[in-house]
Every structure is written in structure tokens, then in C-alpha cells.
Length: 433
Image (cartoon, rainbow, N blue to C red; front, side):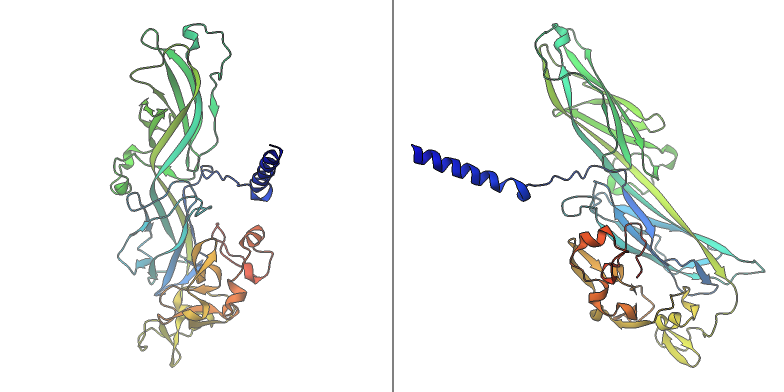
């Protein structure tokens, strides 16, 4: 008997040691924050200044799903853009792009993101004597989204019988901040109402608000067509669904105007009998279509393009004629020739093989990350031949540009460390060394 007791004590201590200390798991709440799908312009894409008649002006976006709901084939977002065709000409006829991105999860703790290049532009010749002309490019993201909240509320029918036994719970209102989306449920006002004689039902007033920076469009029945022919005249509404312990509630109104910001949810049929006092699971789901836009002003420099002949005369579309020689656009821009429409930094830019810098890296937080996201390389078409990419000389050494092992350390202070931590931040800015 003593031997058995000793064995049980040792086994208990062993199991305890395996589930405590450094081996304990950490739970992460992905249903927090007030952001959904965010967009920002990539550095110099579009540039701040362009020359008139420049044939290629790139426009690139950082698109990141920083909320808790995922966009997929059945609920995709769309990117669109607007520009003034008095100054600019769209090289491509496409006016939108699909967006499919995972929300925050164990796989993507900060949400999935991508670099999306929109169709490039040509700058037209500015007519007349307009001084210091400028124009604006606007990019818009439209996407279907959901906000979900799960919490316990008290079901208390003891007032029916004046039950004096000790209660498990008491009715109380709930206050919240956000749930991982731009529309947040902020408050629940809960009461139990008499219903059908000896029955009671929960009556819950749900408050919500737009905590994001964009606009709410009208609710839709088909998320796959959320941004197509959406009724812009019926904006600023969300659709609510709610249930208690699996029993669906009726919410009136079900399509809630955010200018009102509240609706009432209750059991339409049935109720709870006497002598009940317990916690029940309450689930709310908000469905909505969200839209946000960003804009950038571009100054147009008038006058002759310096030291550069038209593209005609060179066999390949990624080359321009400088003097009597055809040069790739990467080197031409680096030399101060702005026919590409963008002024590069004073560093030495060259076309190098894509394999020399590596096309993707899988060791960074589980993402497949393009090399141009992490180094000073531009992988847009039109600067180099297809098998090459335009990079600065400081980034030809992969190890000094993109290969770091401690991502957390770089995240803490990406700009204060060496060049191995130079990478694109969430805001779309770059840390330069």
C-alpha cells in the first residue's frame, strides 16, 4: 500500500511539472481590435512627383486583413481606383481586383496581407499654361465583413415565485470595446420580461457603432456580390442575428441603422418557466459591407524630359534610349532620367537576376514573403527584363537584406537595428538604414 501511494505521489508531481512553468499554454484573443481590411500606398508608388508624358507611373498598395473575419471565394473584397483622366491615362482597362485574405488566427496572428499592384498610368501632356499642375489618385477597398460576440448572460426567472434561495447569477448590463472588426457591439441592456402568464423571456437591447475609418454600405443577402451594385442610397446599416443557448432570437429591426445604433432582441415564441437561475450562452453576429478609401496627390512637373529619347528605337519595352544607347529603365531612373515617372534615391540601382536575391522566403512568421517587401527591390514590370528585378547595390547580399531569424526582436525595434531588420511595417512605411 505504501509503495502504491509513493508511486501515485511521484506520478502526480511529474504530471504537474509537465503542465506548469514554461510549458503552460497562452491563449490569444483574436476577436479584439476595431480594424478590418486596411489599405495604404506603398512607398513611391505612386511617387510624389512625375514628369508630364511619363509613360509609366506605378501604383501599389499594402492590403492587410487586421480583423477577425476572413475573406474567401464566397465573401471576397474588391479593390478599385479613381483618377482624373484629364491628366492621366490608365494603361490597363481593368478597374478592380479581387481581395481574398485570412483574418487573425493562429496561422496569421496579425492577419494575412499582400502587396497589390494596380494598373499603371501614363501622364498626359498638360495643355495650356497651367502652372504647377497636380492630380489625385484614389484607391478604395470594399468588402463584406462580420463582427461576432459570444458571452454569458444571466437567465433569472425567480421573480415569478419570489425564490429566496442563493442565486448563481444576477441580471447585469454588459459593456464592450470591440470584437475584431470596424463595427463594434458596445453595450447590452438585459432584462427579464413576463411573458404568457407563468413564463419569462430575456429582452436584450443591443448597442453598436462604427469604430473604423470607413463607410458602412447596405446589408446584402449574397456576400459574394456584396460590392457589386450595392445600394448606396441605403447605407449605414448592419444586419444582426442573435441566439441564446442555440435558440434564435427575433431582433427588431434586423437591419439596424447605425445613426440609431441600437436594436431589441427577444424570444418571439416560448420562454422560461419558474425557479430558473443560470448562465446561458449569448451569441450575436453582425453582417455588413464596409468601404474605405485613401488618396494621394501627385505633382506634375512640366517641361522636356531630361537626357532621354522616346522609347521608340529600342527593341524591348523595358528599355529607353539615353543618347544613342538603349538602357533599362532601372538604370535610367537611377541616373536621374525620369522618363519612368519616379525619382529614385541616389543609390546605385541595377537589374539583377531574381534567383540572386530569392523570390520568396518562408521563414518569416509562416508567410511567403516577396523579396521586394523586405529589401530595396522593385519587382514591378517595365524596369527590367522579365527574369530580372531592379535593386539597389546594398541589397544584392541576401543575408544583409532579408534573412533574419529573430522576427520578434526586429518587430520590437525594426528601425533601430542593423540592416537585417529592414522591412516593411504595417503602416506601409519602410525602415531605412
